[in-house]
Image (tube, protein in one colour):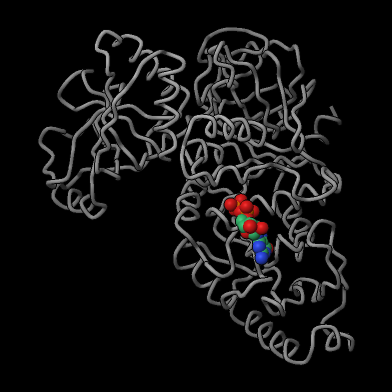
Length: 530
Ligand code: GDP
């Protein structure tokens, strides 16, 4: 039992969120480097294939392969067992990116110091807010020309609406980036040498009052630092771990993932400030992660790359207790006891079969098509269900039909199964039946995946007509509203999901507010429920 507690206590499970190119991959690599999981950074993944312009299937498949192997990475560092959840960006951006955040206990938000808060950061940040998880900010690329750090803090506060508290502060930027000042210890970490970021960086650790400081960072930067520190001590938010835990205050760090400046300092503070796996809400109340009984929920389903078998990998987050390979678990939604087959886990870039795993860990299991997103697994004898995972608003819509009308059945079966995996969402016109299907996706790449998979796995050719709509809203109080009588705007369209829930589609974002204004009592939501 002592072991169980110790194992769970040392786990930290978090996601890294960012706008593409801010440095998420580089930072992940550096964490692995410091964890000793890899020797030379740059070897984690060949992800730059993601930069492809044309979306031919081979590329998609390659990427799917890569995103399978990079979904979660586990490594040890300083006694901690760290699980990093990857949130795919670029063309790979999809609902999975959002859902992954449901499995994390905290998030690291990487911001490019020359660009500030960007579009995809805002979207991912909103999803983190849904769960009030702690959010840590890493302002990256300080080795390049950067914006004023005070401006960056202001922007985070005003655009994202979260308070900030700098834990370290940059000394210079661009070519003059000399290191960081640790506000807690009043130490300066002046970086002396670096080997293109491929090895851990050497740093000189000095207190700010040491006479050597000026010679290391120079007069000008020293004076600027003293001035900045005074300003910060007077004007910035106080550090308050409770507010951090509640996701109201974001500790901010500066550094450069490429050159390793500030990485170790960040990692150490981050691990100290984050908590072991958090309890999760279920229909029977909170489930404590230290409860010895195993429980988990499915947050992602990945179609197998092997087309000969229509099997899949279900990724689950362990929420309590310990998992042993071969143990029998109870799948609540399927009302069935079973063994989890081929449990696997990812260590850096390798996959390995797991024999045991603990609360906080993510495992992938073979899924013969029985699991759905949000499903609960627990020990036989228990029957609770974890709180459902939201469905996130798609931003691209297309009308889809099969070219060969004789293949209607295969078409419906295929598209429904792909929707069940959570890669796409499907809707219908509000008043008519199944004739035409409206597909919504978070990232446009999913349209290509859909087209290709229907062709290769179900033998169905489709026609897609893109729609101009980009904003979707669920009707939160649907039982109190007569959908047919909603006063709309000219760009508004009524649709329903497969369960018959009504939704509204809009071309323009402003129209959402107009419709809310015109219909008192109507409640619209950006999230649905699985
Ligand atoms: P991602 O899309 O967020 O995963 O970003 P990547 O980690 O792939 O980084 C995007 C580009 O920025 C790559 O060319 C990196 O080498 C570069 N980059 C990442 N971190 C830094 C940094 O700290 N300084 C500089 N100068 N470049 C960086």
